[in-house]
Image (cartoon, rainbow, N blue to C red; front, side, top):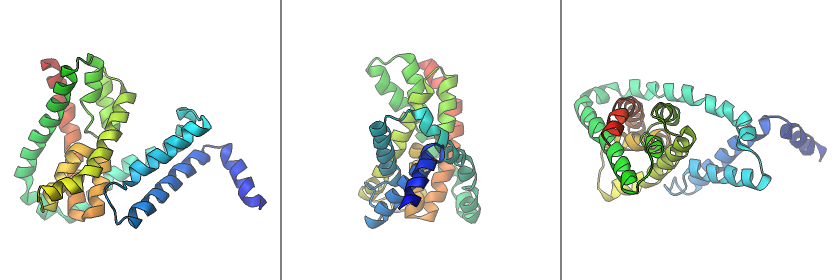
Length: 237
């Protein structure tokens, strides 16, 4: 009886507490997603975020205290992104055959994501710093926050928008693609990676490895494309 209590006392005084809670929250959320046969609405990231956020609110824990432990998971985002090179290598012949369509989709998708977002924000009269924060919302978090800061935005706001965009895309992608009768997993994956970055890519891999591969490619390419064209669109608007 004392062993679990002693473990809790130890964890509560170290960053390992929130690291452990983060990992357990995701494992529980992933188990729930499997029970629903990977239903898009049972997105593991969304469920885990709701659980951890609720716990932080109930315990009155400051985000900085939480991040002292969660930063170890955050560090792994880099290696996880690099690891996407493995499925890319395995599917390289298919990727090579689709280079031209991918280039066209990247150009149109990146521009559409930027223009539509900025146009709606301008219609509501939002200030420039909010526009700069919104512009990179479809890019993976680390890159999006850097772009936002360089453009004069609020990186913390950008991080929230990026996560929200990723979750919404991951939830919508499967029913939307099915409704549009798009059966090509390369096209489905590239589309979701273009607008929903890492969270969408995780969803794509859970559906099909080819979709996940193309989603990872789109995620990387869109980060570069957005970094190049976002300053231009902001100057024009």
